[in-house]
Image 1 (cartoon, rainbow over the protein chains, first blue to last red):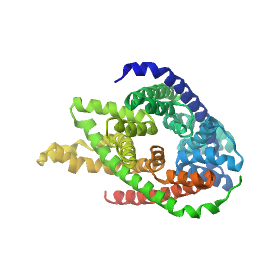
Image 2: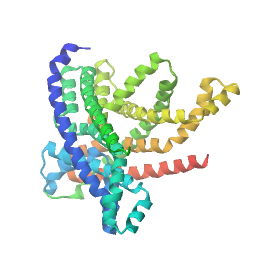
Image 3: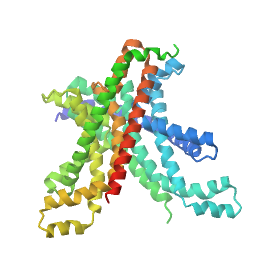
Image 4: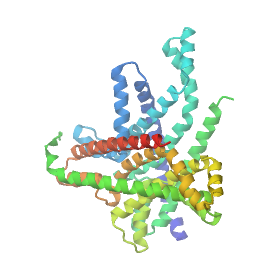
Length: 215
Length: 218
């Protein structure tokens, strides 16, 4: 183990880790937006919206995220979408994870007992009011933990943008593996940083989960 | 530059070859991840601490880091210690081990959930601990986790695209080959996405049949 080398290169890895965090945060926000819209579409009474939501989930979960990313970044210019690598990374990964989050959010909403809607409707609430005041607050409690699983996957998934040359952790590790021929040290360094990010995120999710639980 | 799909048929054989290798690496890595998962689970639960703790560290490291990073480690790491593996083998090992760790988590939980009486009965009948695990406990545990393991296999198919980065000439790399000659990324990535989607549907159908058969055997 070459400790000197690790001490020499770690500032570059820290900088890359910041970029990984930025990517993760932006991707998670976009994913949650897409996931909420997707779930709303999937649960909609309008056939067209329902179909659209189902198609979104099926297409984006049925093909590799890497291909989606390449299609957007390399194929985008052909259909008039010019994005830099970072933007393509956030949009590509965000829309991808959104498809998974759609299922998570939808799953939480439909696992709230049906009697809740019926009772709310009986009390004179509109179906929108029942959703807003009765179902969603309960569903939110149920979705924190599974969304945490999605976010965990998303953080590791940000490594994919290394393939379109965004200088995040995996790309940095790859570059230093190539120039130092010390793959094990570089892996440990990058791996440790990923695990710190994932650990802290996991603690945050657990905290949120405890906070929204019914006492 | 608009879209022109007329260049695609000329690369039909390249794409077909990519489909073949994608299926080959997915199936072989899936088999490795299945048996590797059982192996890791048994070690984590039953081996002495001197073996099971380093194993847990390894699992922890593999679950907390991206697959792409692990592929770089395996591919370049082995070259560094003098083992020049073909890219396919490196990709197979990387994908297989990565998912073996995830399968191991599932199988461990399932083994613990098998009724203790099963092990006791088998031991009473004169089976050794190893035999009881092998013939009585593990088959029941695995049966319980076929659906979630199936989900991991589907994830494995999609993650197999990553091995293109270390030079395995599967579907994603064949698209890149065709794009290198035609400069038409959108067309080829779209076609390849359709191929993945179809393989994915096929795999889901196979898994559903398998699940039904396992259900029926109860």
